[in-house]
Length: 439
Image (cartoon, rainbow, N blue to C red; front, side):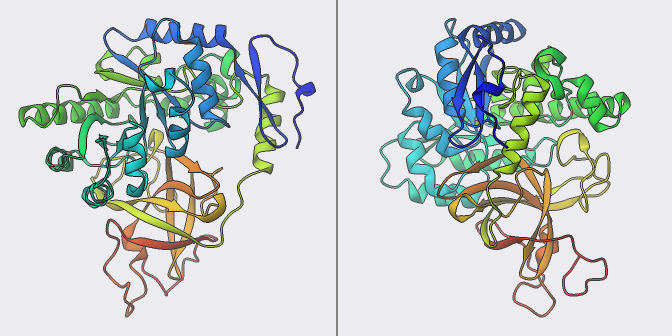
């Protein structure tokens, strides 16, 4: 489907971005972005810093540049990108880009560490294997790499469990090539409050219909789980400060648009990461018919599925009973029913590395299936996806015990380890009577 510029009614509060193919995207002009920034600053107490998260858009760098131009009052402390390549492109976009903190929020290949360090871009350190490999890659680097610990306080898709964080922080402190710049987490179940006028299909009213009614939407917002996550995060910060593992200039950040829109000051700490209050995707603010036309066009031009890809295991962990996997403790086939985990689950965080921008995981789905050595694997997409002309990096969570391999083979029983490189390919769900692999 082609969405031409003439299809969109003229509105002086929006500017067009050439989609490079058949889609014309529109982003807010300076006055609209300025209004949003002022509004967010009014919701966030001083001196809490504001990081704007830019993802799920056609051109995140274009958004960042326009936000820089609109930020006349110095609201923005930095930007969070889900892709290293977008962060690197932004650093080259002008003088203002040199003055911002820039964080790649999801695990990247440790081989990119020198590029990120040289550009003063911070990264997430997902585990000890990644740390060792990144330090080795940084041997000849001229600058330190700033890193953040992404702590899983109950969402499942994040990286480190709280008990593992102090040890990894100590390991970071022992490396001259690394510097701990932050400790972060993400809340699974804080409902985002917005307006129907601006957000249309993503407003609470419209979303309630999508998920099955107001009651289902209210179930998404779980103050009890939010309180538990905040308590775990606060306890971790206390432990790290007591053990002198938290540098004075390191920032603690767990709050996002949900906590800001609800004025949840207990979740704001040193910095908040605000996405949808500022940037709500390529259809942000568009009329319903235009939003749907853009989404249909994007689906029609999806990056092709690769027949075979490689996936790097960056973290292996065991989620405790009572944890969630994903937003709202949603139902996820073969991983969790609706609600928290009823028993502990061992999972792995993957980074896909596929040729020519292709992906073994359908980016339009929240979860999918993979195939590994003839065995079926259920995988869940984490927060962000990153695709370039060189590769596509998509974080996934899967059950390591499911891919141990058929009995009697070299893959039998061992399960996954950090640093292991897998071959994956898309496939249909497994048959219940399959006897070839362990389930």
